[in-house]
Amino acid sequence: MSVLAAAHTPYTVPVAMMDALQITILVLVAAGATAVVLIREPVRQVLALSAYGVLLAVLFLAFQAPDVTLSELTVGAVILPVILLLTLAKVRKREE
Amino acid sequence: MTPGQRRRIFLAAGTGFIAFFLWGLSGLPGFGNYPGPYGPAILRVAVAQTQATGVVSAINFDYRGFDTVGEEFILFAAAAGVSVVLRRLRGERERPALDEAADRDVPPTSDAVRMVALLFAGPVVLAGWWLVSHAQTSPSGGFQGGVVLATAFVLIYLAGEFLAFRRFSPVTLTDVVEAVGAGGFAAVGLSAVLMGLPYLTNFLPPGQVPGAVSSSGTIALISFFVGLEVAAAFILIIGELLEQTLLIRRGGS
Image (cartoon, rainbow over all chains, first blue to last red; front, side, top):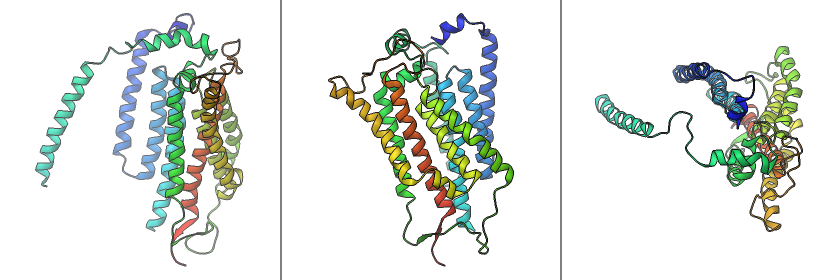
């Protein structure tokens, strides 16, 4: 339905531009995922994971899935990093 | 196992994986071409049948509502699991937040963090409720809204301290809200059964105006219950983790 609606709105984007946008974001997501894996310091890794969650959310938006965007933003960029940071704090305390 | 053997096993497994992966990819329909009959069929009838313009919500909470009940109970079970695994064990004891070095308080939160957290807490609650209550008219829904509501309590923790977090979300109340949310969804489904309809049939009047907040019958109601369940589940999980980090220490003194 969104496709049909888009045909009647002034917001229609040329296909080539949408392709370019989607490819750019796909490359960014691949780079972000690689960065998350390569960062070895846990706290920095969690922060990178949070940024990667935002990238993924933008990806889903560019692929016309705004509902998944909202889920990814809330869970991937916020709640998951919070839970991981709390776990890291607990583990560190035990190491001391 | 020597490194050489390990590398050979990896190369064999990697080659096999890539071969199967490419084989699978070659059989996929073209990018953006959905071949199934259900997508177009749902798009034709969904708005007229449910008066919900958020068709994704109509699918999640109505057409495929039975799936969503299962997913909701996955989260319910996960929260219960966290509570059980992180319960206080023998030999562990609770202790107020003190610095490890001496009997002095933990360093206070910086004013900047407190101010930002306080400024955001209210708008975050508003955004959360908006998302929960507008599943039928937008791509939001109880799940996303519930998670946003839970983050408001993380902000309360950041602006104050753990005790403030607990004052705003007492464990018993959170437990009850979670149970009401999970049970409410199931009860909406059972109400349909009591009326002689299949489980989770949308038995409420869908309204006259597509896209009105009051439209869509049980879809809005189920989104509300999902919002309660998800918010409470995440608050419980985060509360348990905060308690582990801040209060519970191992053994002795």
